[in-house]
Length: 265
Image (cartoon, rainbow, N blue to C red; front, side, top):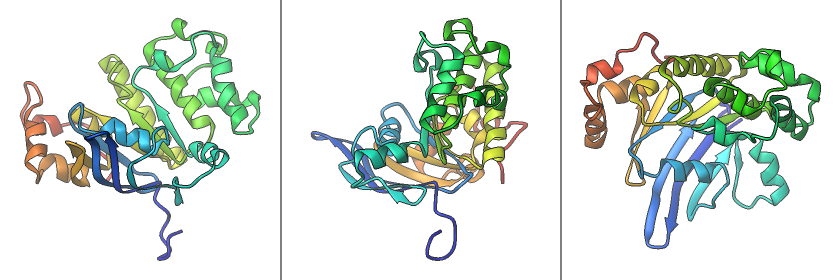
């Protein structure tokens, strides 16, 4: 709990800076995600989204600034403490085939993080059912699965260690449109069931509108606008956000936002 009695944020990023020599990839970014919130991070390629996410995951050190996960700061942690904290933050990548070891069966792929979390390997079937996969896939290899099935396995692996936050890096962009909708609905269901928070990185504003509670817009390493998804996408304040919305091919702003399932209010 925070001093005022409210829950600790799932993620709290303050004045984050990441430099590579003379190049500044992230320039003083602030980002706060509440427990159970789906927070989308949008922007063009090269805007700094992936660099920010890698800092949050502890894969690269920030040049300056603070990152806290579930109330615990990343700075100054020992290797053992960092390994423990990383269980609280998991990532689901864009390409599920590249994210899974092709030499491991589904059973082994899901059993591995269960062991890390101190859970029983007999729980593999339950974890598959949790993401909508039948038990008869247990002894198949990734190349024997569809893209949607592979992404469900990747999600099951991420959930097995009991994270507070999932970083979702374009998790549906490599999938067919019909499969994208199934995975998005699965993510919504999982969020409700487990009170997960998501940092959802995407170029697809239609997907963002469908999924996100809040949106942050990143431009040239800076977060230039943050707010409820409906406000940011319907009445953007920053010129870059307006340009981003207007650049959607073949669509005006209203059609980008027109989706049968809006974000949770």
